[in-house]
Image 1 (cartoon, rainbow, N blue to C red):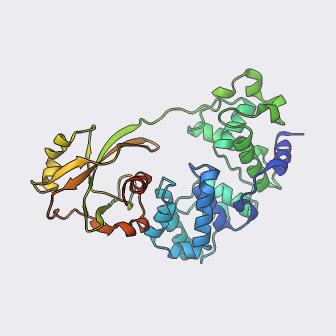
Image 2 (image 1 turned 90 degrees about the horizontal axis):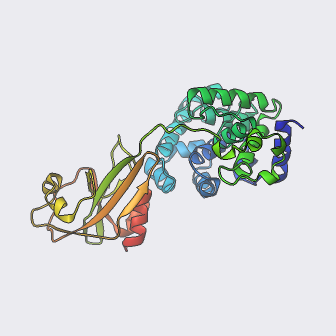
Length: 348
């Protein structure tokens, strides 16, 4: 048997029963594909079910409030995905009469849909012969064929996409793509691949050359940026001061607390003398550390957060984009995972 035939045979016998595999609805396929970007299936599945239940059609999604979408998205990270999806749904309503497109050339024009997602939707919903090359497919192909071209370069993406397109069954592109993705996820795993159970191991170049742990090759391209957030907890009358984040930074339009960002971790005394603190708070205010410090890792940033309780104040000067929220109303606000976890652990 050839490569793709054997992969499909394995898939039909071993595939996981996932809800987005049982539909041709391009909207639901789109929903699953965006949710699963940078997210494991086990983590993404309950989010898919939550969104599909809350917004069963693209019209429902388009009509939803962005804050509610972000609240449902809470914990998934990469919140720009949720905002882009809202824009995409509205574009479908305005430009496509509410019918989610299934052709690659139409899908690629929608916000937040790149080559990978357009290929996935078009092949799964309409059997358009387009290869879907995700991390699992990159890994499977690089190991089996012994390709060491870096996968995060233009040359690598082009090389692997051309190869994947040459391999898929033109009559069953959707099945071919699902099979390769599942095979890479379940057998040809990043660590500890199950080579003993692999039906194509006999012809695997990486296995022959003992280079499985070296493939695929990925270049390191970006530095990790460290940031120090000093959050202030201003509590009165069973309410806490909340600040809605603006654009042009992480966690756009989500809710956290008033903060001062510093270049390093600072002490209470250093904060009290900080110019931004002196501008924001009355002179007689006192602060004390509250809870434990938190390290939160994003794709290209490490957030080091510490929290301070504000004591002995009569009135805090207005903080832009802020408001007092009752403790029992906090659940309704979309928050970064860092803030969500803090509230869950430290506040009533």
